[in-house]
Each structure stands twice: as C-alpha cells, then as structure tokens.
Length: 75
Image 1 (cartoon, one colour):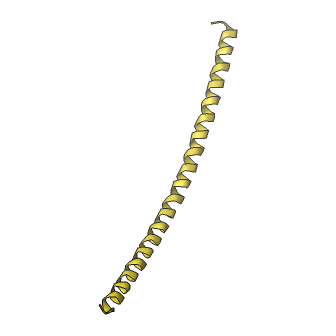
Image 2 (image 1 turned 60 degrees about the vertical axis):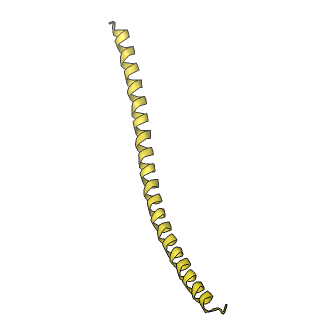
Image 3 (image 1 turned 120 degrees about the vertical axis):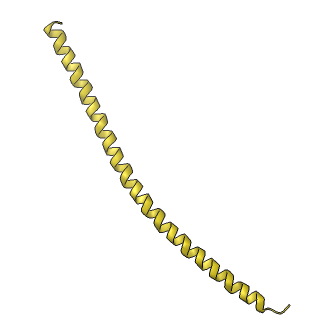
C-alpha cells in the first residue's frame, strides 16, 4: 500500500466514522424524544383512566337513581 493509498483509506475511514457518529447521535436523540413522549403518554393515560372511572361512577349513580324513580312510578 502506497502512502497515497493509505491516506485515502484513512480519509474514507474517517468519513465512515463521522457518518456513524452522526447516526448514533440521531438514534440517541430519537430515543430520548421517544422516552419523553412515552412518559407523557403514560401520564395522560393515567389521567384519562381516572376520568373514565369517575364518569363510569357517575353513570352508575345516575342509573341507580333512575331505577329508583322508575320503581316509584305507578303502573
């Protein structure tokens, strides 16, 4: 291998490593963004699950009261 070939080889390797470094950085940033989004979605899901339970409880109470009114109606 001549000195010129060797310097071309090093330049190509340097470019490949730079490209790989950029890709790894992009993957790390995407991973961080997805973790943050996942955390937000988990919090939102917990909040909506709680709201859903509260609404189901309200519907159950309304159903019970309505049934009580229907039972008191004369036939």
